[in-house]
Image (cartoon, rainbow, N blue to C red; front, side):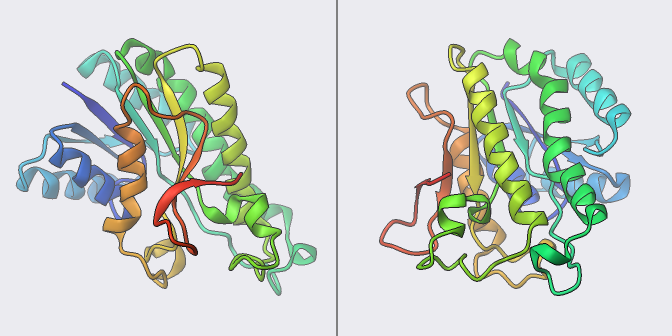
Length: 248
């Protein structure tokens, strides 16, 4: 049995990621903060034939994370895939420019998008090490790419906000550091760029669907033994290539 834990899996890209993995015969652990929403999502997947289980998990609550890891250990003994999908958008301070950014906003965004990823990964890493060849996928964004954000020809050039983009830049470095630590193991660690996907995070303004947004995560979660590690990989907004590596 192959098991996958997806945080923030009750809706949007997280739910669609769980659905696509389940369609491949993978048992999906639908992690969500809200019990009712999480159970409803897992129930919907089960009704479609998936092997799905709800796991109550708040990535900003260390006790919640510890309980989830203990439950997974007791039920399955190991974990094959971790997808750190849970994330929140950048809240607007003033005119949304760096000089208007408040520390309160930064702390709120980083608590989920950065600290939560480290907390969850560290809690389940012993379970991932027990799997034959585990995969860790951190759902990042092209707006976390310093190269793209500082290129005047890039669609990201007009963006000036700090909270969300910098949280994804931090997440990219976190991805690279875990990939280095686990370089000599069968575990592969990569960051996924879903592209500008219509979700609650952006008021459903994205031009990609959750089905499309989940594709990079599913690809990285099911990499073969000769697949890459330590990459930002996913949708390309411009150019002739739809999917592939992106610059850090």
